[in-house]
Length: 177
Image (cartoon, rainbow, N blue to C red; front, side, top):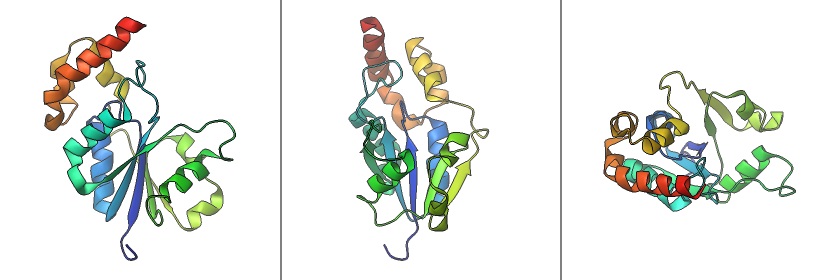
């Protein structure tokens, strides 16, 4: 691993869509090893986070197989560590020896997660969200509205067989609320 570039991505993937795929595929062209954290890993059964970590891991593995390392990342609780960036990096370093590149959707908040000196040993690479304008909320709405055509348009074909199962799951959550 010494000479290999190691990348890191964080996302909720709730569910995985082609915008996420674009980010992951780009990162795979820039690094040899890619750690993909599934954020809010302990949250599920809500309309914002309907799917369990295992369900999201399954979606990522169906599309990317062994090209990526998938791991859970729980939300940061009060008092756990001083900053989100430190928590993210310390969690990554339990899995990989270092992080050379942090890839993220071009959002201002991501730039504020880390102390300035982190940039001395890690490259920050924002990826514009303008390439594919889709968000997880859109996919969840497609599932709720039984819009299978739009779901298929914005998700990988390897996930299409999961449509009925994902729709059933999100409807069960909606009915509970």
